[in-house]
Amino acid sequence: MAGQLLQIARRLDACRKFRVREEPGAVVLELEQVKGVRYTANKPVNVSSVPQRSPFRYPGGKTWLVPYIRDWLRAKSKRPTRLIEPFAGGAIVSLTTAFERLAKHVVFAELDEGVASVWRVVLNGQAEWLARQILNFDLTYEHVRTVLDHPAGNLREKAFQTILRNRVQRGGIMAAGAGLVKAGEKGRGLKSRWYPETLARRIREINRLKDRLTFVDSDGFALIEEHKADEDTVFYIDPPYTLAARRLYTKWQIDHTRLFAAMRGVKGDFLMSYDNTVEVVELARKYGFETRAIAMKNTHHAKMTELLIGQDLSWLHVD
Ligand SMILES: C[S@@+](CC[C@H](N)C(=O)[O-])C[C@H]1O[C@@H](n2cnc3c(N)ncnc32)[C@H](O)[C@@H]1O
Image (cartoon, rainbow, N blue to C red; front, side, top):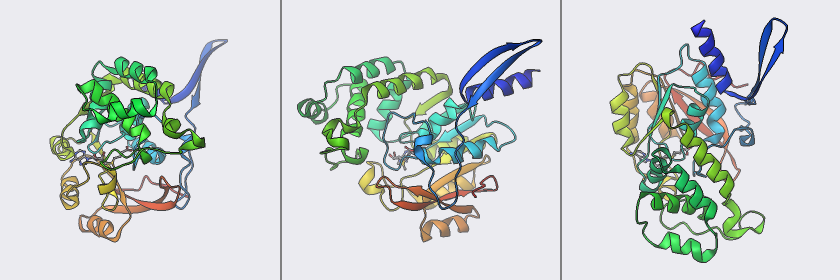
């Protein structure tokens, strides 16, 4: 009975809407499922069908990977105790896992100070301050310059500055040297990616899930090391890429061979996403991992392939 109830609770969490209706001799619970997304190996996922839950528009963001993440985690015989995302950025995988209860708990890490300040503020009692700051901000060129050009006085100001920077700099790029959005969408200029109500709502919703989410502003490698012996832990690994990372992130350099070696040492399962290059395929082969190239669209809407890497990708059914 307890097991069945738990199953119902999980399905309830993963559904979009539900309705309870009485029938003679029964109470019927109707669930409207999150829309399933079909994908094929050479056709990118349509991201408009995936709920966007992050306050960031993150360069290299993985919203398009969400349907795959669901399949990966739901294919497990037991719900993982923990999902670890050591290179989290906009953390769409961590957020989706927490929202849809795909693992019992989520731990995510990020080294970029600005990005880390947002996660710390949202999950540690200052979410409402940040939401209101966003709602009350009068976005003009002068106000943007004032916020971006002065060092933030404390953690929550840094969080606001980071969200603003992410929304008004071209491509959401927060690394030094990124210019401001000029014409933007539909000629809205600087405001073209500034949706205060949506951002405030997302921040409040994430805050409500704070019991399921732990953010650590530590090195992703340390987090992997800490959990490598846990069998019930799964890792989603999306490191700064080999090609474009320098332009996109302040923390862009990592030792990819060290990362592969670390992943070979973990007891639990993992999934990595990488750019599909000969070097990465070779590295995966060297460490005995499986690879599959899947279609995606980059921020310029160009079709590309991305490499998924794991110990066992048999759950991956693409048409
Ligand atoms: C490809 S991005 C992750 C994007 C993320 N999957 C998303 O959907 O938004 C990689 C991230 O790793 C961060 N990073 C780089 N080195 C790190 C390290 N040693 N520990 C933790 N985070 C690191 C970068 O700052 C960057 O935000």
